[in-house]
Length: 491
Ligand code: ADQ
Image (cartoon, rainbow, N blue to C red):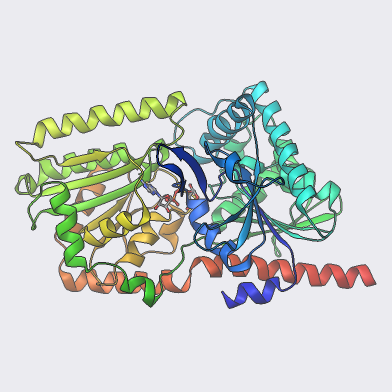
């Protein structure tokens, strides 16, 4: 955190993302404030708390308009206001075209290669461009200086860096792409590939989670744009402007002693988790926590549970997977089909192996607060992450952080960015049912000493590679670029 303060001293910081970190909702009991289930918010919020500044986001809550002042500003977090949240209000058509359409039916499947065909509608593209312009206007109007540091978040805003750059040429624009970047052939099917790439290259720094994503991006630019690429320095120069392409693996806030001391003991978490679902205290439990999204491999997880029970009938009645899936983008057909398919699959498995009050796959389509999630992570024997493709995956890191009892096994997809950092997890190919089923069995039967050895090593990695390091490294590179630009301007 000290690194953040040092690098940002005196600089104005603006963050821009689609999702807002706090959603104000009207309820019969008055206005309540919610935190969205979002990896981006989980990662960026602690950074904003540390450095103040302004966060610009789409106002999506039913009471968002009631809490802002005349400048559309509300100070957050509600319990300890430290930074300004500024909303952009979108019409229903804008939200459908830009967010649901181009971003989530186009770019999301395009970048994830999860065998869901991307949809590219001209009208969605028009809204995407329009909304990027509106956010650019808001950011520019919010800037008090002509050289702020602007952190642009994610695939909703590929055009924003260039739009801001045109009006604030001296700004330091750091864009972070939270999802994977595919190979040039895959990205090349997008009808507006060149516009998107040019938009992104308005950034001073363009960050991805892994080197592999950086390489894919550079190869994509090489294929579709006329630029100068310096592979040695990982820079791309377009129209005389240089962009550094670099990997910054995102992470979580590592809990301090005070936070840990507020957690219930793991024994209590174990009991609570089991009693909530009418399971005996010795019942084996694996936990899955995801947005209800087809990229997260929840169907493959169900197949692995079924296969494990086929291979190890002694586990029937003794093991359950508790899957907490936060409904997400449910107005899109692909998401609804997926939710229906998964529910059917879960019913089949439960009909086949369940009995009386026993269900091997407990599916909860709900969003849970972070305190409950902490208890679930602490009370489970294993956590299973089977993403078919995932930029990083923070659930895996949250599970590790919660296990200060040095127990619990992480099963992790090789297609999550996190797999590169966390080799002591049981790494699986979720498309390989047999392998995933075997890993699940291995996790449930792993001796305590081996669990301890693995989780200790995982904890050392995540503690060190925390979210402040993620932001700190990006801002250090930004500070370096700013110093260089100031020197060059004087020459
Ligand atoms: P996501 O796809 O949202 O993030 P992830 O990184 O796992 O995926 O983060 C999800 C966050 O939402 C976690 O903090 C988790 O606790 C929370 N969450 C998930 N399900 C929940 C539930 N049912 N109830 C409450 N909270 C829930 C995107 C990319 C990832 C990348 C992040 C950050 O897709 O690859 O790691 O951004 O860059």
